[in-house]
Length: 249
Image 1 (cartoon, helix red, strand yellow):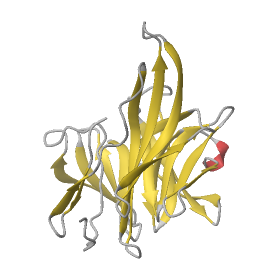
Image 2 (image 1 turned 90 degrees about the vertical axis):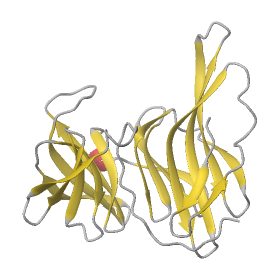
Image 3 (image 1 turned 180 degrees about the horizontal axis):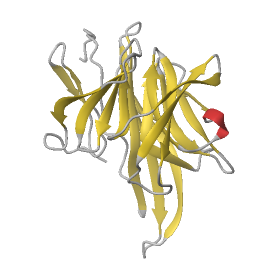
Image 4 (image 1 turned 45 degrees about the vertical axis):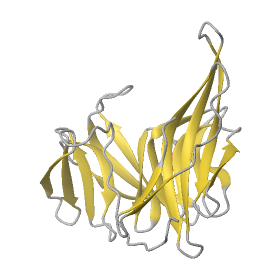
C-alpha cells in the first residue's frame, strides 16, 4: 500500500505520515477500497481512514477467504490504529462520504445489505438501512449538513456503464429516510456535490465535464472543466476547501 501525505493549502504545510503497519503476511494482499478524512478543531486533530480489503490465497494463488478492516490515523498521536470490520462481508468503495464527522459507505452483511457508519470522534462502527429498503445504485452526498442518498434509476440493469434518467433524493433525518425530491436530467452520469444551500447540484457528464444544475430553474450549465485530460482518477470528486490553521508538526 502506498504512503500518505497530509497537505494544508491554507498554510502550505505538509506532513509525511508514518507507514501503516508491517508488510502483509505471506499470501495476503491488502487493497484500499475507499478512504475518508475528518478534522476536529476543538482538539486540533485530523483523522484519516482507509477501508481495506484483505485477501488470503494459497501458494497457487487460489482464493481462500477475505476480511475487512479500517486503518485509522490520528495526527494527535501520529500513529495508525487497526479496527476490524468483522460483521461486514463486503463493501462498495466507489461510493462513500464524510459528513459531520461520520464516514458512510455501502456495505454488505452476511444476509443483507446496509450502510456502514463510522464515527470519527468515538471511533465506533455501526450500520444503518438503505433508503426504502432497496439496493439500487446509490451515491452519498452531504445535503444541508445531512446524509443524503441519490438513488439512480437507469435504463439498463446490471453492470456499468449505466444510463441514468432519474434520481430520487433521499435524506436522513432523525434516524429515518425521507424522499426529498425527484431529479430528472440527461447527459450526466454521476452526482458530485451540493452547494451548502442545496440549490445547486454538480454532476459529472458523459463527456467527462463538470456540469451544474440549478434546482430552482432546472437549467444545466457546462462549466468547461474536463478532469479526464487533467487528472488520472477513475471517479471525479469535488472537495470543499475550509481554512484551517492547525499545525501538523
